[in-house]
Amino acid sequence: MHRWLPITALLAGIAAADAADPQEVWEQAVKAKGGRERLRGVYSLAIYMKPADVNLRGPATNWLLVFPDRYFEFDGAGAGGSQRAIVVDATADRVATDSTGIPRNARHLTSYEHDRLALNQIVFLLESAWLQARPVEVQHNVLVVEAAGRTYRLFLNSANLPERVLSPPMPGQKPKIQYDYRLQRYRDFQGVMLPARVTSIDGVRASIWDVDYEIDAKYNPKLFERMPDLGNGPEPWRMR
Image 1 (tube, rainbow, N blue to C red):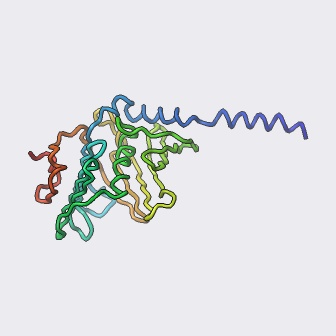
Image 2 (cartoon, helix red, strand yellow):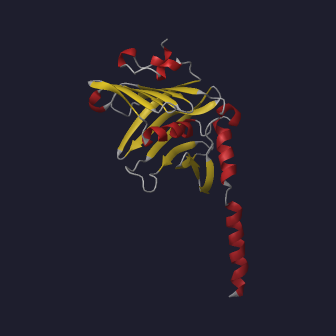
Image 3 (cartoon, rainbow, N blue to C red):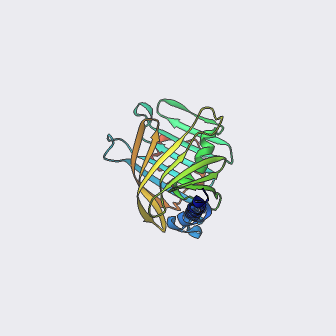
């Protein structure tokens, strides 16, 4: 029986040697994205999304992310083919929308909008001047991190870039909300590696987008003080 002990010890040693340090894996991913200095220097990000050819044709969608606490969305293909514009300002605790056929309204942020503020930074930057995730563990190519009260599973490709970001529902959360993004075709945009194809998964539905970006897009901050108006088009942040 004792002759098996050295073999067991050897196997345990190999396993320990192969166990990756979550912090080290995180540092490799941050470096692959563009490096900490570059990522923390990003203050806003305009995202232009059009349905990929694998989808049915439809209108484009534009986002403006102003880190860390504001974002704007123009959804050209909302429920029933309607359009929707939404502005979110977490500092003012204000969400305002304009949807075709529905009166404009303003309300307080829900947990969904709070989640999105962190999710936007994790999916597109990994790390920012305002959000630094805490690496927890590594399972093969999956790095588990925690940020803003949620857990994120980052599935890393051979270049150490996330090809999938999955945030499962939080224990006891009602309604249960899961975020699942597939990220492909990385390109260098002004020193930051960003996915030129993004797939968002909602249950059995997959929305696939071809994506372009504008880093540190110039915007009028009054956008977040006004009621959104679909009549201003998909890029109202450029208006004075």
